[in-house]
Length: 90
Image 1: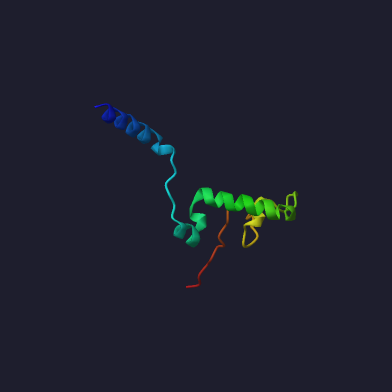
Image 2: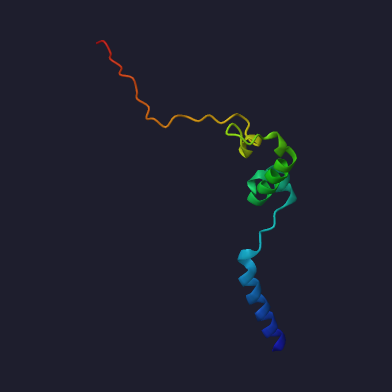
């Protein structure tokens, strides 16, 4: 009876800690697509910034995201686009 009580207490504690326990990730998934896992993605980005952070200028032209962009970001104006008036000759 005592062992059953201990088993119940251990299982209740395990159920309570289940939401804080990260799910296991296979090595194959991390090799194929490491950026799918948010924690691993942040780790990769932080390590890359430590290595290449001295290349990023601290002005307005560049920021930390510039290290990870394939193409430069284009800021489009926020004015509404007005379509031209098309008149057809019938």
